[in-house]
Image (cartoon, rainbow, N blue to C red; front, side, top):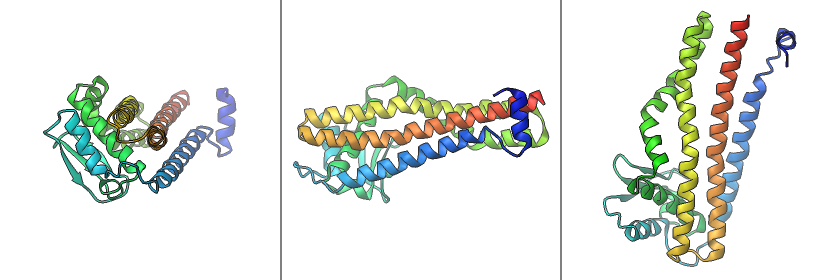
Length: 238
């Protein structure tokens, strides 16, 4: 769209860059629906091994010689995560005591993150080093950008864009980390005989659906960043 055409459209109250926000919203809704749908389906499928998520996590850590990580039960649904700061695998209500294929896949995925840290997986080292800056970027980037727009002070807008870019980069680095953790999980579940071959396939569907939420979040962050850059360029041209 030429700049003159853009100005004509914007003059009638239509900002074409809002389509980026619309696309981002649609992506997030699709990803959220997909992960909830797939997880709910396989949360009702009991694994043949009969192991709970907590038992699977303990078995994977034991087989990998990891003895300094504890397994905790936390409240919530799909709140599972590995915290490298206190070395805990935190499994949610839907995972800890469940023997479903979905629960086992999720527990193994979190252990995949443990193995990444233990083996010095490079992308997760980058993500860990970026975490403090990304936290600042996600909290302060957008307020700084809006303040720059309100004051019509472009240097401040540019600072905000740079700060927000740190959070966006963190989201992008997260993608290979999550996909790799899922790959490790499926390989271990198969090699250790925890899930049968057809169950591994079902577990892959669960983890792939979960990974799509990270893809949607990263895409949303990138589109939001592009919109801020476009708005800043438009104001500069004005």
